[in-house]
Image (cartoon, rainbow, N blue to C red; front, side, top):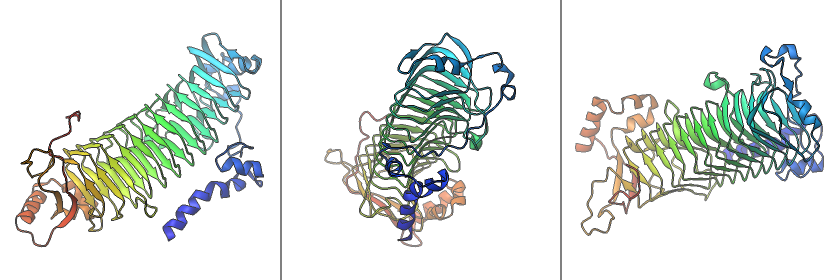
Length: 452
C-alpha cells in the first residue's frame, strides 16, 4: 500500500510542483497542457536566462557575425540558407522558419550559456553545427533548447556542449540523424545528450549520442526511439514516469546501463542490441517498479547483468513479457531482487552466461512462466527428434546461494573454492537445494539465425 501511494504521488508531482516553480496558479488551459494535451499555455519552468557580454565569451567568437541578425531579418515561414562559415551565438528563434545549413554552418556560443533557443512551433533546423555552450548545470547550458511543437531537428552536429538537445513540453517533434557529444568531462558531470521532459509523441530516429551522460525521458508518453546509436555514456535511455513509449532497432554499446524502466507501464523494447554494459552497476535492461512491458527480439550480450528487476511488475495483475531475445555471455542473465510473479519468459536463447538466474532473499523464480527457451546448459535428450527436450530444464541453487545473498561475494563466484563447494553440494547436498526455474519444454537445438 505504501509503495502504491508513493508511486501515485510521484505521478502527480509535476502538476503539484509546477505552480510553486512558476510562482503563480496555473490557469485551466495550463492545466490541460500539463495533463499531456499541450493545447493551452505553457508552464514556464526554465530558469531565468543569464546574459553574457561579448568580452565574457571565448575570444574565438569575438570577430564572428552574430547569427541572430540573419534570423531576425528572415520573414516568418521562409527558408534561410546562410552563407557557409562560422557565426556567433546565442540564437533565439521565435517564429516558424526553416534554416538550412548544408553542413557548412557553425554557430558557436563561446563557452557561455546555451547556443540555440527554439521557442516556436513548426520550425526546421537542418545541417547546422552547434557548439560551445557553457558548463553550468544550474542553468542547464545546452546546444539546443526546444520549447515548441511540431518542429524538425535534422542532421545537426552537436559537440562541446554540456546538454545536447533539451525538450521541455515539446510535442510532435522529429529529431533525426543528429550526432551529439557532451563536453569532455567526467561521466557524472556531463550533461544529458538528449532529454525529454513532459514531451509527447516525438520521433527520435537515426541519431548518434556518444560520450554524454544519459538520454532521459521523464513524464513523457508516446515517443518512438528508433534506429539510434548510443555509446560510452551512463544510461543509454532512462525512462521515469513515462508510459507508452517504443524503443526499437537501436544499438547501445559500452554504456553502464542499456535501457532502464523506472515507474513506467506499457513500454515496448524490441529488436535492439545492448552490449557491454559492465562495471559494478552494469546492466543491459533494468526494471524499477515497472509494469506491463514487452521485451522482444533483443540481443543482450556481454553485460554484468543481462536483465535486472526490482519490485517489477509493480502493479497487480500485470505482466512483463520476455520473448525471443538472445541473452548471452552475461555475468547473470536475469536477476530478480524480489519474488514477484508476472514474467512470461518464452522463446529466448540463453547461452554463455555464468549464471542463468539469481533471486535475492532466498527466493525462487518458479512463480513465473518459463516456456520453450533454449538453454545451453540443458542436460537432457531429444529422442523423438521433435526439437523439444524430453525432460524439463531445471535450475537449482546450491552453495552458490551465498553470492546471491551477499553481493560482495560475487567477486569469488568462479573461484576454485566456490566451485568446489558447489560441486560437493550438488554431489551430496547438505540440505535440499532451491529450484529456481523449470522450463517444461526446452528447445533442444539452438534456433537458426541466432548469432554464435
